Amino acid sequence: MKHVQMLFDEELLEELDSDERVRMQGRSKVLRGLVSSYLEQRRRAKIDMQYVAGYGGDLQVSEELDGWDEEGEWPED
Image (cartoon, rainbow, N blue to C red):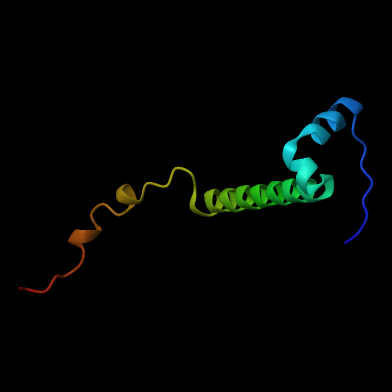
């Protein structure tokens, strides 16, 4: 692991230090978990945007495929 220096205002740091999980696990572990969650959320949002860009937000599959069922030849039962 690598050391990272961060600046917090005093009120925020006091609130962080008063949290039960922070007292049990330590600031570093809690902050690593929060950063990891943030990055995962951003990764998922990016994937969601790529899906929308790739497939279009207004894609109406049923409308685009209307009439195609009549174009094929279906076997007799």
